[in-house]
Image (cartoon, rainbow, N blue to C red; front, top):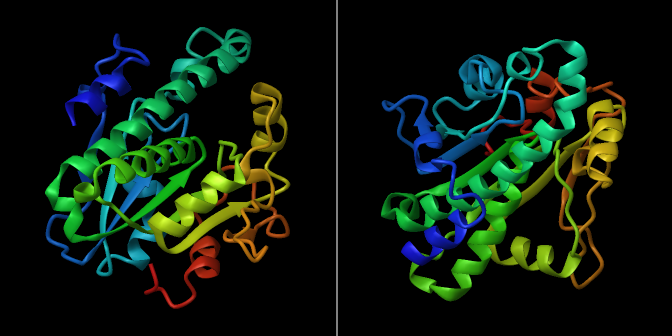
Length: 258
């Protein structure tokens, strides 16, 4: 794992990522055969993650062990600390920087999963919100790469759930392999065409369409879509609307299938 770690750190060796990332268990008294890792987005540094995700957590409290993946995000307070105008001028710069950090932290999450014997004993779900899905994307890429190299460290994921994804996905052939080989149950994309943060701001900043602003299509050999898409446009979901109970009811009607 040392070579993997050195390769990841070449992206930005100046940041002490090991001190900035952490997998935080929600409740050490809950035991299940499933671990669900939640990865938050760009401006969540000062938020109470338990409060933000309480509907999901409460619905599955005894069905899965929840972990929050803490990574060096940002906050609106930091961005607009020197005034609104300055904050607006620098928000693209801050987002680009956060995107680069998300990429590295996705690779490091893969390293954590691969290097610990603990995770090999559980089914693992990844749930991302906003830029947290960029973390997930690069975690999947890294898992795919190193699963192919070292079969002893083989990791499979149960569900991967993208919510308001501030990332873009291209290359149907590669993503087809990711889903076929490393996702057991569902690869889910929750999107809304009225999410202006993604359809306008992300598109302008990145010159790409975010997965959270449209249906995601990755086809198998028979031409069927391998992604389970949930359209929240008619629910009028904006970028911060997804953590409400309606999301849980749509994705998990039985409340026990995570």
